[in-house]
Amino acid sequence: MAHRRGRVGVGRAGPKFTKKAEEIKAVTLTSAIETVEKLEVKLAEFAKKHRKEIQHDPAFRKKFLEMCAPLGVDPLSSEKGFWGKMLGIGEFYYELAVKVAEVCLASKSRNGGIISVSEVKHILTKRGTKFQFAHVAVDSQQKGCQYSEEDIITSIKKLSILGSGFRTIEVGTSVMIVSVPTELDHDHMEIMKIAQDSDSGSELGCVTVKDVCDDTKWNKERAKRALDLLLSKGMAWLDVYEGVESYWFPSVWKESSDSSKQEN
Image 1 (cartoon, rainbow, N blue to C red):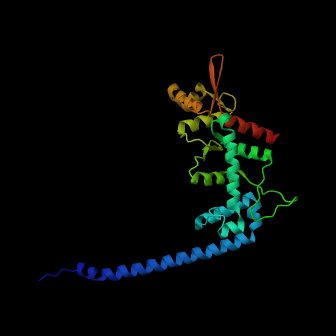
Image 2 (spheres, rainbow, N blue to C red):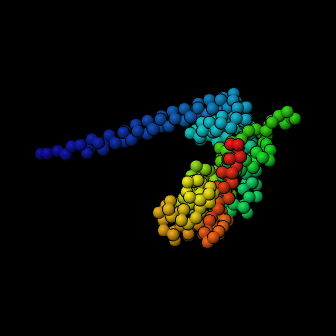
Image 3 (cartoon, helix red, strand yellow):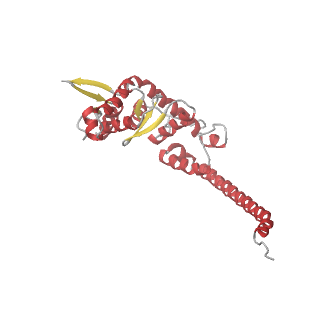
């Protein structure tokens, strides 16, 4: 008489395999946790050793934050915790975010709530804005810490987490800060990118409907619809000369103007 094989044996062995798999999983998880904890200790030692560089060198600070990210360590999350007390960079980014927000809001009537990171840095530098870490004593010979465009972008990310409406977007080769709730789609971004291109046919920071259609191959209605929204939000200005409508983008024009001054 034929006997059935296979299924009975596997059924009996099932619980053993399951138990073994759980043991292996537990060991692997424990090992991973131990590895992360060791790396966090090393990271803390590194931070103590290079505290001054982290505080005062923007490039070094950027690399340090990149080191923290894979471990889930956020030195910016708390001012009272270990990282806050040792480095104070959480408070620095908070202060920077406040100053950046002030610049964005003050220029909103001019640019409609969109401004390049480079222009914000230029304005803060022109004002002589300086920042001090909380635990560092201020004296007459001590300079405020240096900050970069990357620091400004990081500060805006911290603001966006709080639901402030501030965010950054990439337009061509530039990073822009948007401080209004208007959603910009691909068409709006493409038009501002064309405005950055000095070879588009019009002056830098300016486009016409024809420029947009020639560059994108869109029809006139699509180009006009996107331009009208940017115009209605104050992100573009309209200039009519001899029957030709030119759309100027203050954020793009101002950025290129500031860049030219710095080069000269």
